[in-house]
Length: 321
Image (cartoon, rainbow, N blue to C red; front, side, top):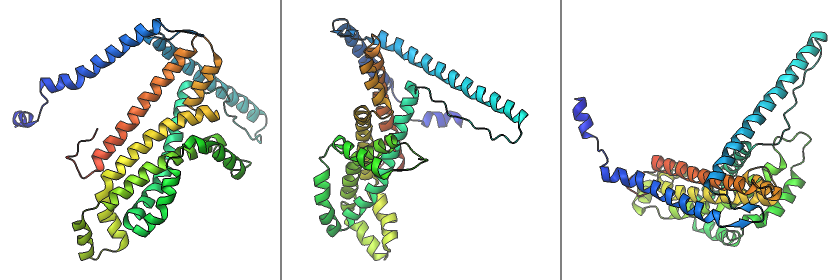
């Protein structure tokens, strides 16, 4: 029985396996070879352009620096706990405090900051764009009213908003004990501004393209507004919504790095700019590590969204790449 089940599995052919695995490896090897050859012939003011070997060496250095910083932080907190324990032994009424470690963020902490920021901005934009897109798709009057604003603000680079966002956040977000830093709010709002439009437009297009038969079914069943949206509109427009979400996340990730560089907000963009300003002989290799990391994370985010799209989309026959 098990043998029959194994035989019924649709195993990929050898040709398909080689195409899926060997060709990407060949492409990467060719890229590394050309990169290594070209790097030897490029002289910059900071020395030779880094090749793959130099970049790999700096990757290891960044890992070591992160581990050293984590050890330093652990010892910092350990000393505080020992100091507080000694004080409590002498004075049981002593209110102990633990101060946060204020060491410079490591490369991996900068990665986490950028990821956290882009996800917050992306989620905020999605929560705004999807309902507005559904409204625009369902109501011609709403679309006519909102479309001029979409066409006006859609072409504006989010980086053009950055000075305004920075000033508004500084003026509005005033607190003696802020939950989030102003730099985080500024970066997240900038990401949200650029993530808004692709999701909104694709959602509106998807909703307005729903099959008329499904609309008639909703009328025959006399579904109320909420049931019509949840049982007819959302399931039918999910492929278009996910297309907008994938575009939004990719654009948001690119814009975040530029915004962090321009505004000097914590994250991978600031890491790149700081290394550029540092001007040491290893700076170019460290910047190249950040560039490759940004690319890998962008690719991973797109694959995650693609997997979610394949999971939730009703159209399993669609070719998704």
